[in-house]
Length: 321
Image (cartoon, rainbow, N blue to C red):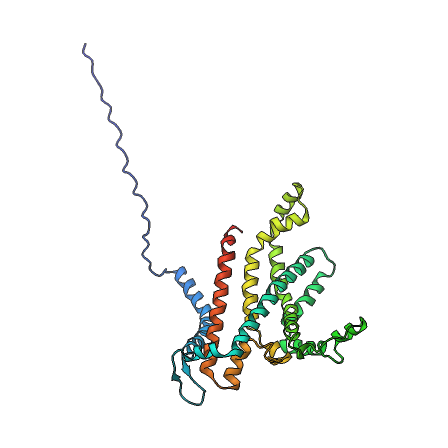
């Protein structure tokens, strides 16, 4: 009897499901809800962009153009090339203002940052009524500089001022603080340090409150002291805040004007004149608007240079925080 081989038909494979198509990146403007959100965002930032363009961008462009002209407001600008910058090299008073500005910045910024950090550390603890102390420290920052300068005028008064009165109890005869070429600039620097502590304290305090507590708990378990925790944990983690405080403090120091105008008027013998004060004098007292624009451009270049240097020094470590 022969053997019959039965061949079973294999089930047909189902057709492979088509792979889902991935939309190609075409760079087109999103449609639907995404487009509406994009449009809403542009509408919300439009007023700020318009304000910045009209009152910041346009004046900067005009100032750069006027820096190469001779312009006294009454007559049309006359192009003079680099003459204004050559005049600055021969201007002993403006050179003095650059030196004073650098000295003012050199002392107010690091000392103010150190004091602001110390105050922030003190107010970050469980101190009773710390809200009152925080408000008291920050109050000079939101007080009009003119009012603060008037108070310090009384403090520095050589006849019946508070500072010389306190010194007299110690048998010390205080000098005429704001009328002395020796003491005028240190007196102004002291006012700048005192007034700027509040903002630095606030920024550092916000940064301290965001630091992870787990690192301090682990360090305590390992036996690290408070001092070691400060230098090994707190300071490295505060580098972004320190960089921000440093840049904003330098910009504020370079732009100091109000306290100089009220306290000393740039004197005595130009010992407290600053770059901003010389720009003001050139533009609004001598009506040398072109020369004042050139001075402003030099101030801008100095600020930009210091900012880039500080970013190069501190920027490399910010990504680790």
